[in-house]
Structures are given as C-alpha cells and as structure tokens.
Length: 224
Image 1: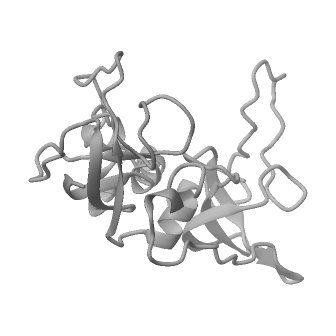
Image 2: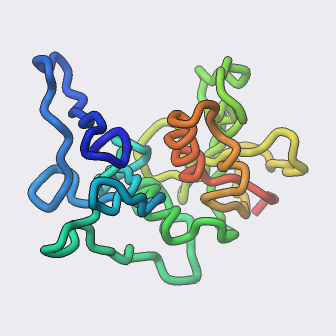
C-alpha cells in the first residue's frame, strides 16, 4: 500500500509501538492480517497499473485503520477481487446493525444513503459526558460527536459491550430526540450527505470523509 498511485510513492508502514526504524511496509492480501479492503476511489492509471484508493477493513472494522493506494493487478491477472458483503435481509432491526453485528465498512456498503428505521433503548448520558467538547474539525457534530447518542437492543448504559448503535444528530436540524432512558424509534442512515463535507485539506479529507460516512446520522426520532 502506497501514499499515492505510483511506484515511486512512499510505502505505508505498519503502526507498531516501539517499532525499529523503518517499520515494515504495510502489505495487504490473503496471507496478511489485511485480507479485505474497502475500495472507494479509482482506478487511476500510473506506471502501467490501475491503482485504487482503499482502506484496510478488519472483520470488526469500526474506523479507517490504514488508508492508501494499491495496484489492482498485472498481465497475469487481478490482485483485487470483488467481494459482495453479506447484508442483513429486510426488515432490518437494530440488532442487525450494531457494532458486534456489522462492521462499519459493511454498513456503508450495504445501507449507505438508505433510510433505516430501528427501535432501541435510548441510553442515558454517561456521568463523564463532555457535551460541549472542543473539536478542531468541521462539521464538529459529525466528526467529533459530543452528543453521546446511542441505541441498545435492550436497556443498558452508555458504556459496556459493542451491542449498540452510536448515532449523530445535527444540532441545526429539526430532529427532536425523545427522553433518554426510554424506548425510541429512530430513522437515519449511514453515508449521510453531510459526510462529504467532512475534513479540511485534501489528504485528511479522504480519511475524515470515510469516518463520517460510517456514522449513523439521525433524520427523525420519536418515543417508541
């Protein structure tokens, strides 16, 4: 994996604590810890190859871990093979799209831009919640998410296991969340249009947009 679509571009290296300099280059493929990629740009032709901008996607992917360019293959055949994700069939319930049920990469691939309505327990604010935290990026409500909005399939607290769906709510929208500590019926989507406004400079924007696309943005809510 490289920093740009070119054989002369820098190799990405593994982020390993106390790694000797230089750290090993990041390699992706079937015999590596990164057998799956989420591809969202390309192809770009350079040096005789078709290059694709991709993020590593471990099985429990909740965020973009590594992001870079990989070549798609050579005259002997493809190095990247399309894989259709196993998407939950309708009707989609909250338990189908929690962290432990579906990686965020799969959530975007399966349901990106599609309104989903789910019912769950709207958790109380955690005792250490900083609802007015400082965020250097815009839109802050989506990138930094200080609202602590979360649904669980069963009543529970904010902290705990991964059987939950964190949510983001635009404070300038007309969405009115119900009382916390009660059942709620929520409509929202992954890959919300607001995600494409995330990030500032060109390279950071790519990673920021991917992070924002994986967030579940609430578009309507009521007591449920």
